[in-house]
Length: 241
Image 1 (cartoon, rainbow, N blue to C red):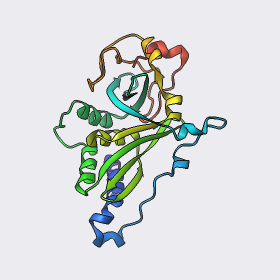
Image 2 (image 1 turned 90 degrees about the vertical axis):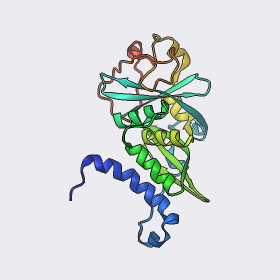
Image 3 (image 1 turned 60 degrees about the vertical axis):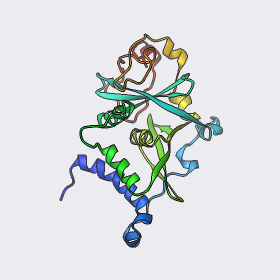
């Protein structure tokens, strides 16, 4: 039977979580389960730019989720993360399902029906696991890559994950959201750049301060979810975060 496309997106992360955590919870089936593909190692997860600072991949900075902003013209959404002091902002484009899941969590509300991210979180906690850290490792071809770090008792599991999915999981378990200095250097927006743009109100998440967010107009029409928003000097007057 052919699996619908929407079901495929749901089954992939669920399968990874079940395979990663099921070995301890369901020992009777351990022999029948295929081995879990290990997440990228530290040296592969983030690759320094040629001639760049090699320490940029090792330095980690903690981020906070501030808001979710709809980008009407691009038909996508941006999750806005900031450093603790608010001096740097990191926007990440996500699809509608991830945006809705994160917005519900920021508003401390429950969706009418469980979303895919809710089901994935329930599987992890139901198997005795918890998310301890989410990491945005690198930016390759304008696409963010990352990992989610899980613990199940004494067992530790690291899985490759889209930041849009892992951020929702981090908010569920109040886990750390970390980013490498390399990603911040390449895609972060400074407070000075933000203050130079017009003021506005919060996005759909409603958690950001009124002077941080504005209804943005994305000049890169159709930017796929998970991609970093490249800032073109001649277009910065059209973007506000």
